[in-house]
Length: 484
Image 1 (spheres, helix red, strand yellow):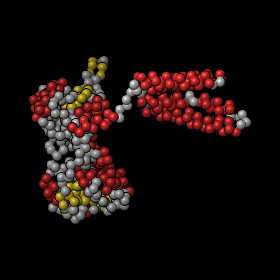
Image 2 (cartoon, helix red, strand yellow):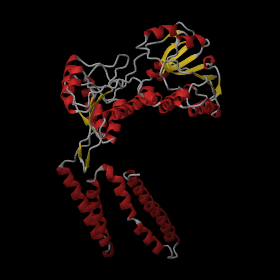
Image 3 (tube, helix red, strand yellow):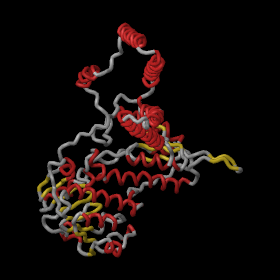
Image 4 (cartoon, one colour):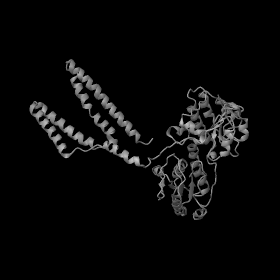
C-alpha cells in the first residue's frame, strides 16, 4: 500500500506528518511513501532528502493512506480516492461538522489526538508529544519577552533575584515547562487538581501548590476534568494570591473535548508586578519548533503503522478488537464510529466500598510476629541441641561448632535488621568473603585422595562463581547510583 504525506493547508502550519527519517522507517514496514512537493519545506526538510530516504515526490492525495498533521481541507478530501484511510489530528469532539463531513465519504478516518492514555499506547500519544514541545517552547518565549535573568546572580554590580514562575496545570506540557524553567534557574511553583502529580512536580524541583477543596480529582482517564464551582472558586483565590508575587505565569490546563478553561482573569493580571504584564497568546507553540515537532509526530505515526501492520508487509489492518485502534477510529468505510466506548485508566486507585472489603484478604498476608514464649522455646531448644552436640563431639570439633553457632546468631541479627533494598549489595560483599573456601580447597586438592580432590575442585568452582558474581553484582548496584 502507498502512504501519502500531504502539504498542510492550514495557514501558518509549519509541521509535516513525516520526515525523511520516519519515511525510511515506513518503507521498512513494506509501504511505499509518496510526499507532496514542498510538504516539508517549512520544517526545513527538502524534497531531495525525502528522495534520498527512499520516498517519491508526487500526488499524495491519491495514496491508500493519507498522513496529515491537521485535518485535511474539504478540497483535499474531495481529491482523495474512495476507501482511503486518513490519519491526522481531527479533534472530533470540537469539530462535529468535520465528523459529519467525514461520515458522508467512503473513507476511514483515524484521529491521532484520540489515542487513549494507556501504557502500551504511549508511543502513539501525539497530544503528549506536542504538549511536551509546547511546554518547553512556552518557557523560551517567556524568557525572550521577560527582559531579565531567570537565574539569580550575585555580581559586582549588585544582586539579581531569580524569576518566579507559576505553572498552572501539571500535565505533560506543565511538567515540561517546570523542567525548562527550573533548568534556567527560576523558582517554579505549580498547581493542578490531580493530587498524583505532586511528586512529579517536586521531582523536577518545583513547589506544588495544592488547592484546599473538598473535591480532589482522581484521574480516571489520564486527563484533567472540569472541576466543581467550589474548587474553581478556591483555585481562583490561590491564583489571585500568587499573581502579585510571580513574574511569569504559564497556563497549560486543558480538558479533552472542551475549550481550555480561563483561569487567569484581568484583575489577576493587573495585580502582577511591573514588567510582568505581557500576554503571549500563541496557539502554535509546538509548531514553533517545526523540525522537532515533525520528527516526534512522524515517530508517533510510525508506531501506529507498526501496530496496524502485523505482517510488516505494507498492508494496513484495522483491528476493532484493539482498544487503541477502536478509540482512534472516527469513521470506518463511511460509517460513523464516534464516539468510541470509554476507556477507563486510573492513575491512582479510586476510593470505593469494595476497597475496604478487599483490605481484609490483604491483611491475612501480613507476616505475624512470633509470640515471645514461643521464641524463647525455639531458642532454648536450639541451645540444648548445640550443647548436646558439643558434649558428644571430639574436643577438636568443639571450637568449630562454637564459631559456627556464633556465625549463625550474628549473621541472623545483622542481615535480618538490614533494609530489603540493601540485601543484594550486602550479600554480594559477604559472599565474597567465601574466598577462604578457595584457599582451603587449594590446600586439600593435592592430597592424593580422589574424593578429596573432587570435592576440592567443586569447592573451588562454586566459591569462585560466588566471589566473582558477588563483586559483579556489587559493581552493577553501585553503577546505578553513580552519575554518568
